Amino acid sequence: MNLIHVQRRQFLKISGLSTLSLLMGGCGTPAFEDIVGQLSQPLNHQVGELIFNPQKPVPEFSLNEIQPEALIVNTFRYTPIIHAEKYRLVIDGEVNNPLSLSMAEIQALPLTSMIIRHVCVEGWAAIVQWGGISLKEIIALAEPKANVQFAYFKSADGYYESWDIASVLHPQTLLAYQKNGEPLPVNNGAPLRLASPIKLGYKQSKWVTKISLVSNLSPFKGYWEDQGYEWFAGL
Ligand SMILES: Nc1nc2c(c(=O)[nH]1)N[C@H]1C(S)=C(S)[C@@H](COP(=O)(O)O)O[C@H]1N2
Ligand SMILES: [Mo]
Image (tube, rainbow, N blue to C red):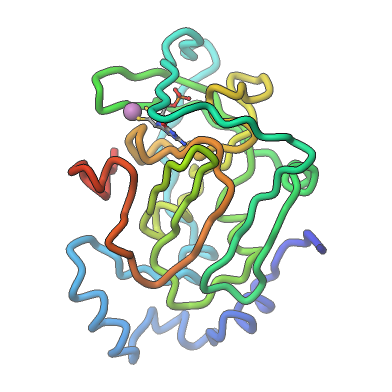
């Protein structure tokens, strides 16, 4: 596996987009507009645009605002035992280059760090520093097809989640392997968990083992969503 950065030209080639279609911002794709029109969320985003024209980051906190004791471990099923050497992150679905990455390969990618507020619907919040790789970076390596609109995240404890592609490709959506400058503890989702300032706590899957990029949602949208919680869950 060659973990080089996907260059813009390569990406356009592999995703079947042309520079012209990017400049036109999706004009002349009536089939796509039809599909989008049926959805209740603002999902008129194209993968290529989201990767090459990053969304605006939300403000972050400073080091002295971190609340090391405030992050409550919130695990509904059980804490899975994952052997770091055997662990692989699989990226599949509507992609031209499916991936199966070891932690060593993931940690060879550029480290991004951010200090954000984690907000749980159960009524608590915590300012946390997360370190990891930007999800956008790793998804670009998988060469998503132009029609991708959602990502499913599968976790080792049976938890599952789905996100809209714009939130997935937000510059501050990370796959984190560090918490407050230390290796991520198992309770908090090691070896790899989602962390993002734009979604509620239950969207931030711990122990992520598989990311599937898709153009449609199935009737199963997420562990809590399927019990009545809101799907978009934006902050
Ligand atoms: N796999 C998995 N991910 C999960 C959960 C879980 O039970 N299993 N709980 C969610 C909820 S509701 C919250 S608030 C956060 C809590 O993260 P923490 O345990 O690291 O504080 O993880 C989220 N991700
Ligand atoms: Mo939560």
